[in-house]
Image 1 (cartoon, rainbow, N blue to C red):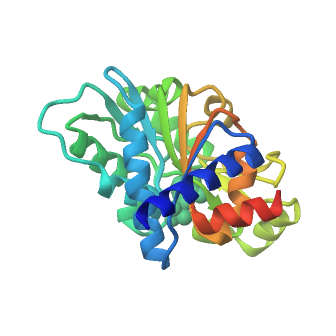
Image 2: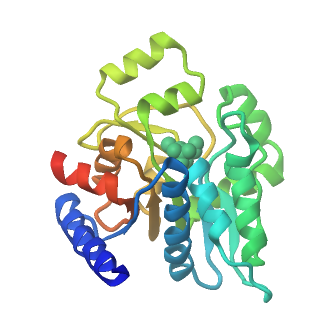
Length: 253
Ligand code: F6P
């Protein structure tokens, strides 16, 4: 029954919370890749909306999973006094999954303010200086230092290195250092030590560690190690994952 199904997901999440040592884990049913992403989005949208309140500054990252969250957020008629900002510059070729696009979608749905970050994720130091000499851009960039909430995706290191077009030599180096996960431009090993970070525009690891509320969303059995790795960064994080990842995490931890 639906009831039994809900109960078993609930006890599975308690088990995963214990395994990972994180505060709160929500688990959704797994299906095909598309179904899993949809379920993650639906659950994470509820969790996200429960965690935001008036006056807050909300950062969001890119990727297919967070895009799915944006799809599930309910449109509000009344203005909601929060500001949404992409936590990173853009990456990859699919505009749909870029942090800027997702932030704008979420701001629209929430009937909230939007602060864009019109800077590519990877730029040279020089280019960055030019960008930041523009007062509007500097202001946007400064806002990233005072996020109240972060909604972020978690990726596999190998997948993200490829998605970002990092060359073979560099990629092997990073993977040989034990990188299994990627989040907000940083690559971590299974224990959560950062092994590589891209010269890039967006929230820093330091900042990440002090954002009051963080919600990570990821699923699929192939992301189990990435989720374990990222969960070590903050025991107070809220995670939304799927059943298949949950079972694999329990096996591995
Ligand atoms: O590129 C943005 C990002 O949030 C990464 O930090 C993360 O690793 C990835 O997307 C997750 O993407 P997806 O949800 O498509 O697996």
